[in-house]
Length: 140
Image 1: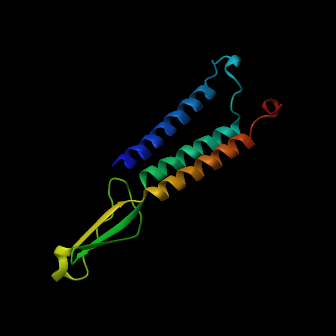
Image 2: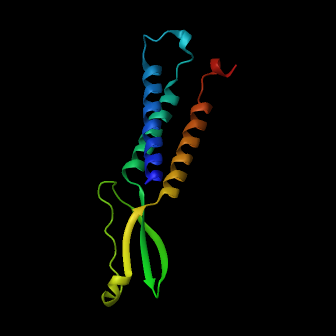
Image 3: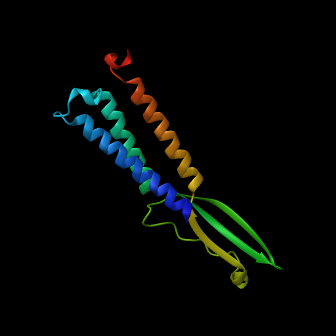
């Protein structure tokens, strides 16, 4: 539960920071003492990054989980369930043998490691492209 809150908190903070940064950069009334303004290429990269982060948040990767309990031993297994909307997760798959249903627990959960990797890759690429497309004046 704590991991979910941390990941969603990071997503929300990133979107707020990116939106605030873009708003400040686009405001023509902002004084020049605030720092250099983003150029057109940087703004395109920034908005593409916001779009990608939004897609990651709206269509996250899911994992099927299976817990089998036999003779007092519990075995857990996972496999990918693909990408599904956050508000409509995939349905858990039923146990293979209905006669053993009390010993099986099927479920679905978000794949947090993959979400974290995807967010890190997007942030690194967007940050690198944003830095690459900086204006000549700010390179000095």
